[in-house]
Amino acid sequence: MMANGRCRMHGGKAPGAAKGNSHAFKHGRYTTEAIAERRELMALLRDMKDLVEQVDGED
Image 1 (cartoon, rainbow, N blue to C red):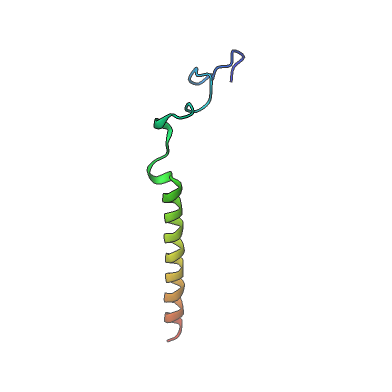
Image 2 (cartoon, rainbow, N blue to C red):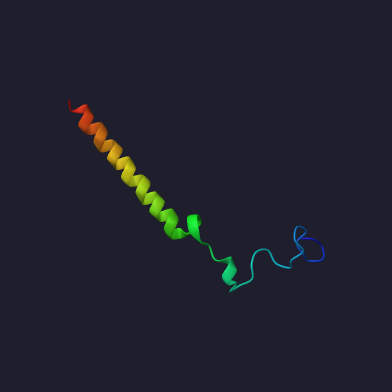
């Protein structure tokens, strides 16, 4: 913020979008749901890899 209360980068009075701005909603890759889904998938893949290693090790 500058001395006049505005952002030096874009001249706005407040950082970020206004409250209730429908254009400020997150969408796509970085939504909470998408991040949680990726974490679950990665955990499943880790478990599958461990299982394959266990099965291969029993030979």
